[in-house]
Image (tube, rainbow, N blue to C red):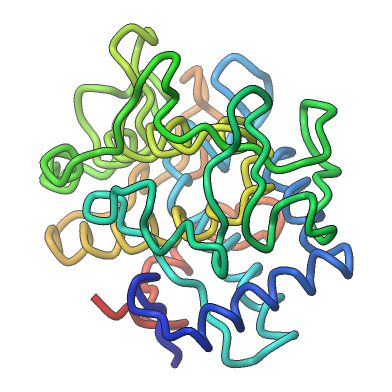
Length: 288
């Protein structure tokens, strides 16, 4: 079993190994396949078909499998590399070591939000953005969205989600806003005026490519979602009597029938069931 660490606790060698593995799978074309996959499975309430990646109960297990697949790709380059996590309730500064020149690089410049520092800056020549909804070929960020400011979630905001003993609730989508740990973490609200929460707010705070379905274009995506995975594990420890919902397939006649994944239904594209992903210690542990 291997260990995933808080990014702030990585040694200089561990940081360099992670960056180098990410750059290498980008060079091989593997990285962009992960970006395409996430965009393909970013299905909203209003679209037809099954929702597995977002706005649904399988948000946590789908991303857990997605992270495992990505981590295995990195380990094919360097077997010692594991995914670090970014605790955005604590590490909240725009000058954090997370954004250092030898790690993820910094904020985008004024005007076009183009990232100019670090190994993923376009000018370094190793990070062309080839999958996305815009034509820009460079990584963009807009920390805190100054034109319409947002802040990273606080410990209290995250605790409100983790305190909820119910995993998820009908109608199992982005409008499940009053009860359910899943959407309190995922962060959808009814009407943008209320603002987004937790997971979604972090995407908005970083800005640039992190605000769309092809958000893995920004390598910080992986550190963000590794923390989301840890949050799920913490919720499980906090509520040992609670489990994944819906535990059984949504019945015919329900508007969500065939649209959301129950405990023992396979998730595309891997055909892995949520029930097979409930225990992260089958794969790794977290240094907390």
